[in-house]
Image (cartoon, rainbow, N blue to C red):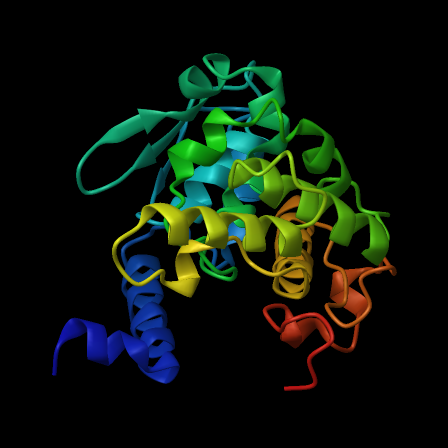
Length: 247
């Protein structure tokens, strides 16, 4: 079978990891298995004493390293199949507003656990980081209420879609539709319009949950208003469930 089909089976993937760990240990290599969040934390901890390289292709790990790495620590490198990047150098080139909000910007614009905004790229969202700072502050705060998350998420999406003159996404959706119908000679696809307020609320919940998980604040997805210890919570295996979902 293909590599993609083989690794799509979680049991196969774990068996391969176990085999690699066994072989590395046999030749004297120290190995620690960890989730993406923990990998970045281990890398930052290691960088206190020596230069550290993280070999990965996942863009989530890149964002996490950029957020967590301390500029004055030893250099942390991310090594991919195409290039090697010094995260410390990259972070020094970022403005403080981007560094503090990068997890929110990444999750809001789409990552492994949140939906991608149709027709909106990462560069577009990053370019609007200054206008998104107020919303970013809400999403990066571990004690934000659901109402605050909904409001901040809707405001952020209005900025991202360039609809700041509208009060709600529902109103912006109607305005955009009328504009496109008046100027287009083709069928107006619904996905090219801003999302509805209801859809935005659930996207905001997922974005907030993921951003907090990346920060180490693993909040039960069905109860975003409560912050708890992830290691002791009985529902710790439902990290990627949608808030409010029983599935």
